[in-house]
Image (cartoon, rainbow, N blue to C red; front, side, top):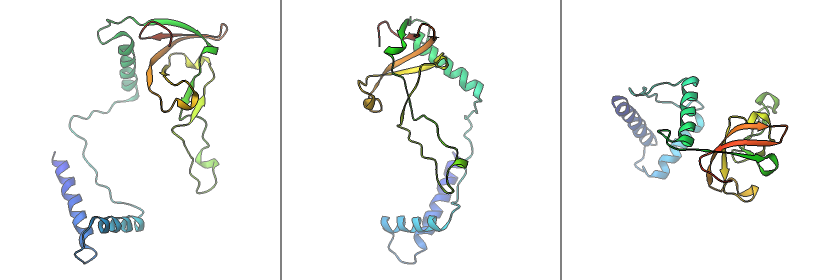
Length: 181
């Protein structure tokens, strides 16, 4: 908590200096915002106040995050105390429409014109071909009836791909309940 108080004191001091810098008594919100914009515009390197890490924060490496993710997926399908019974279903490739949201190839900065910034659209839908790489992935099931409704539709639930039969053109998946999606 001491570091939070220190940050508050530093920020409060900076605010007071910013208000006092014009030399007049007008400290309205608009004037304050205008001053801050001018100060930030002329300073490419904005001051940062670094906070100390809280005592309870623990860094998690990739292996720990992967294990926690696996536990949560298992908990979703089998329940927190293994008291649920998920169901396995098989569906033809032709019955599936799989999309990646926000995906797609993006040109590296080195391939762009000088000064250009790569444009990433987080709502872009990219069709995904059914390939063996879908094995062991968790897929969201959407209530959308049409492709253009996917972004704005609710998620009905999730399935876990347990087998991709390229020869038979069938996917086997685990669902938390019986029935087709």
